[in-house]
Length: 384
Image (cartoon, rainbow, N blue to C red; front, side):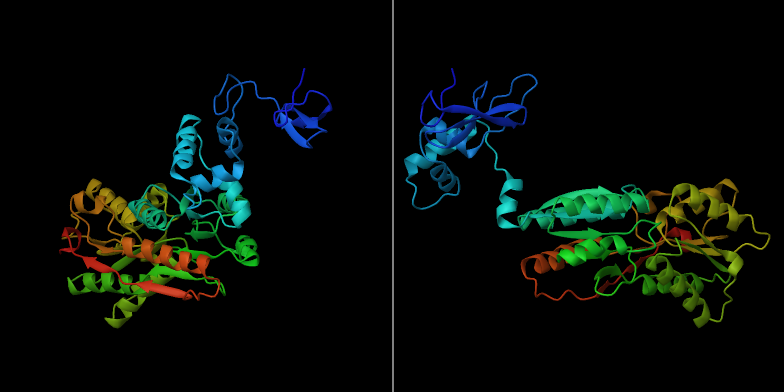
């Protein structure tokens, strides 16, 4: 015999379809729809799950659902005795707020997505740690995704984040990304997107970047002032702005000091270890090889150091090397790597600050390009 869980009537109970695999009933007396729970609220049995709700707490305490809600929000119109009873029962039933349901009401998820191309190098790991901390302090959850340097993955991940209704996106592009059309849905919905570190130019899409041009210029100038004359370059993917800016800084530094730009000494890698190793082989196999190399990042520079040592080439005296990013390995590799330090902490905090300002104030104008300074760290790899 089925009894209404609200009015206790046993007559006038009709079946009303299935809800999550359970029979739903309708009481004609009180117009209440309900299902019959086979276990205590908040308790799981084999093959079934039940997350305690406000209604579960209300039923246990025989108070209204709205009273429970106000007690959990620490509303002033709820006395201390009721509030403590609600908190105790919530703990007993393992109640946790349903943020997804709350977000539908508030039209705000209090979550942001951070999408990076990889999690191997220090840069992106450190960026995520700092950005997540800053977001958490502001009351936001962070969904972290990585594309594995794949454009299709990037498209799929952003579609999922859009469906999750995140309030904003921080995105560093994959090495394969040539178009930003997959960001149109965010623009149309008014969901702010900020590109960082790796970016492409697109009208209306803000960027937070290190000063890649100035950093590259400084690194190559450092090699020139240390006596190197035949300077090569291991560049990144040619479609990325970061690669273009660092290549331009490399060329302009050579031009300033009247040194030749030899196209045979310029190679490009896809930012994977295997590709960096291949570039190192190409440069060191040259009959007339460069006496120094500026690399687009530290992992590429480190692969060059490893390959040079295998060939008995003395890094520093015979081959100067400068990297970019100040990876944790750059200080411990032998010889230690001269590099350009990127302002990771400042970049992460700036990204979160700008994104949250825009989320909380649609009229806030994010600067289209924010450029942060790099710093040269001199080590042994560039000492002639």
